[in-house]
Length: 209
Image 1: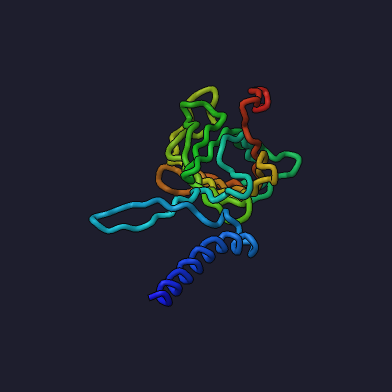
Image 2 (image 1 turned 60 degrees about the vertical axis):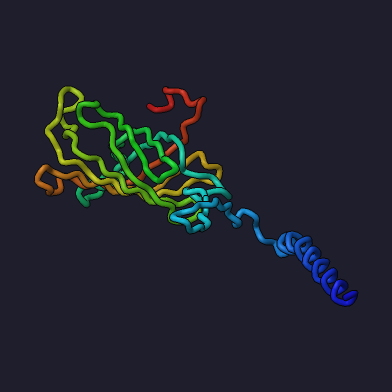
């Protein structure tokens, strides 16, 4: 009996020692605790499982594009034809909000009656790199704006590839804009460059011009 008790005590002691050593071993091996994601308990119809509660943006180790931005879109080509570099037009001056659920909303500096709000979605493609699919639905041709309401249009699609600066306060990249007629045909296509500056609580309105 004494021998059996001694064996049991030895096993318990070894288990306690192992539990104590594991955290130290993980730390010495250089395992980043950020990769260990928290889990929450969920029960469903009598069964139980663990569900990871990770951040959706997955930018815990660096800056995130989530937030509010002042963004300008400068066209370099129109319908595939180069625009002279000394005449690059700014075709949109906007405020953009990227949400953590990977949706996005943009307010353009154009008359509200011509459609100045539109929506999009985004995804992270690399380290501080993002892809945006922006889909303005219906609007008006700005040819007659701001003096009047333009001719109705079906809308447009703007795709963007952008990179965020290391400090998270600027982003830049390229875009393609395709505007559509009501019958679904292409009205005009622009490609060019865009630049964004993060809007903070100290940003003055004068910086938007």
